[in-house]
Image (cartoon, rainbow, N blue to C red; front, top):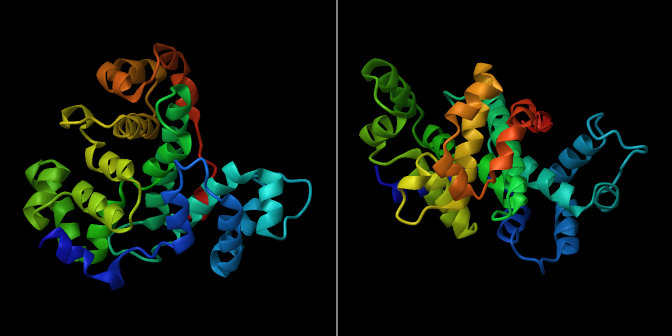
Length: 274
């Protein structure tokens, strides 16, 4: 199978609302009309209701009930609401995937997204909202492979366990390409910013790319921290594992090392979107 054949299966692709795609395309545009985007969110009943349910949850602790997207903008600000709209739209893009526990998949994705945003805030090279989005969709290619051919996708896991090969090697054997390549192709088809596609393609080995992406380095570090937190590793162990070359590429200062305990404890607070 070739990636272009995969992307022709439109009935199997994630269904991301147009307003979410537009919002992602405008992430780095300081002149973006977020008022118009908020109106479009209001017109998408499913997305709007999901956002309002979350905004009115105990997590946000607002003093009064919010009944419209316009009120949510006033109460939370467009920056926070923008993150919620992107997270809700992406997480709601698929309802069921054979071979994947979606609740766990999105829980991991939200954690990596929150860590990516936190890391971007420690430096000055990457827009934190862009970092959050890249972290959220870093594994969308794996989701795509399971949607397109769940049997082959599950064969990959068997190959990894039986042959002790890497996921990239198993994916190439089964599909002829990696999930990162599939993810980049999907983002390009959706006309997402080029930097997002490059980050998804490179995030596992950012320093090996011909033109290394700082955003890919951010996501790489976020997945490393997430893995350490999942394993219950200490801050000291994480500091020993933290790759200096990737941190430099990501624009992370040495001061960040002292804050890694905070990163290990970080919780995205968005798991209810899954």
